[in-house]
Image (cartoon, rainbow, N blue to C red; front, side, top):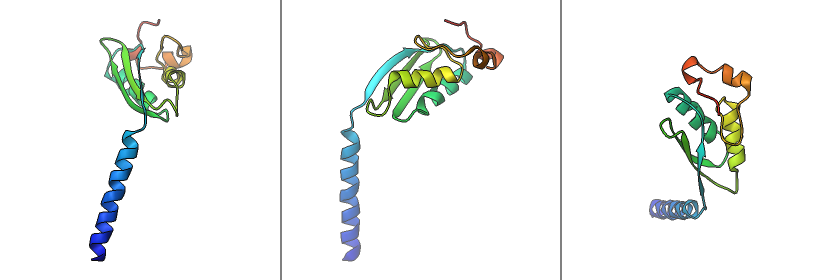
Length: 113
């Protein structure tokens, strides 16, 4: 009987947490981010996801667009673009420093904005 009560409590608690997670509002944004290849894609997406509050980051080499989903209560587009620029990729708002850009692998040296 104790096992049934325990499992029921865990199940109800899990449902409660799932509902709370679904009610958190997210913001979506598209950003122009310069890059060339799959290595750039990994670097850009990893930098974006490293910012607290970013829940999704997908970059396309063809469109040079980064699609973001994030919690606006935890971060801003500026914070995310600064993190991307810090790893060597220019955005419309922030440029990577020349030293970081120049240290990228040769295949990642995109045409600067």
